[in-house]
Image (cartoon, rainbow, N blue to C red; front, side, top):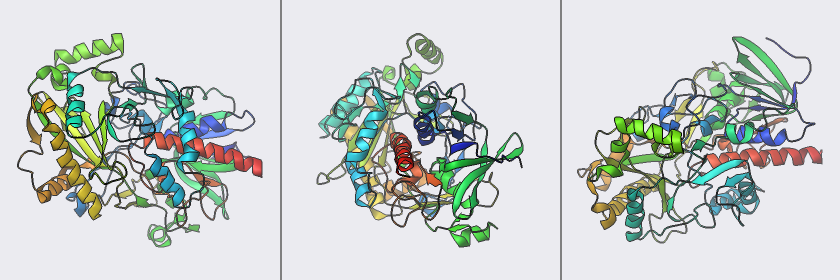
Length: 536
């Protein structure tokens, strides 16, 4: 092992993803603070600037960890693919770029659970500080931050028909779902600017990586944390076939994501004693909550044929049409290659008496046969995908062995709670109700996924369990709060010099996509570290 007798940095950050990149940017703003940022993946991939790369990289070795879940009865004993980004920017470099803050209620709930400083009144200004929204700043939105955000400007009569159909079904339009109120049908806001992906590598690290006090080490696979008594003093990692050791003068911050962070903690002897002993790992710090409280969005994907071929990218972006779309993108930065995962969305209520939306609907102007391979349907079609915003079912992520390269065991327990089952069934019915409204009915053909033969509640539930997958939003496995893993300053309970800052600390699921909240956690962690440093 290669070691250094002196600390190489004040702060070591493990993981250069959504939270880690933001944290590194903010901590290194102080030229007197040395920051060392480790990333297991490479610096970039040629496809990442393209917004449509979320489809190209969804199962690609190299920039993607390509995890998979354990077979579970709740999802027909299938192994579900779990893509996660493995390069600078992490999953923000391969995701669908849908920009959702969540509801104010989400963060007030975090505060109500005992996490001081995490209510909307505290985190709302951080979201505003983050943003460089193309429409400019106002009371709630930011116009001068590092993170580029824009509204999808792709023009298609299908989008208008979807919005009109939703309105006919009783769902209002919302000019800014990231503003005061989330409810309604919307044109998607995305982490895209001028036709290019705005990952945290682009928005946070690009401007910071030349700072003399920030060192970024790529292709560095973390093996375990180094504990001396009850203090974390560094990390061991493998790079170029050699084992290295790095030490931090002040703190180590885990930002390896909801899958990586609990995995590294357990490899380091921090976790449930019986589990660690089973895999021959010495128990250095007992903590039963590590790896528990996993939540994710299960997403059901529905498809309809379209009677007007020009409305669908299945027609417009196939054969010579794809050549035209490539040329269009190169000349204008618009068209198919510039789209996020969904150009139109809805935040809807499954029941009118609810205080806030509990369903998210994604609408796309094409349909695919295989999500993993992104194989397009051979005919014009459109897709609706639906998920429950705040699932109650809890799963887990735990080590399979002491081998740091072995994938952890991911158990989602999707739809384990009755409220989740009922909401998902309602979401499929709601999507069908919108599709049956006149503005869409006159331009669409038959629903072929799941199809008319799936109609009763039992049939819908069986179809969801048999075919649905993750929406790529794992959270909660290093939960913040009492009886969790970290306190409201993101410090690991019972240890010194160690924090966790990523989606794993979310106590509950934010209402929507998780990239923006993850970046917020990185920003918030930097604030906490700076404040704690002043206090000491």
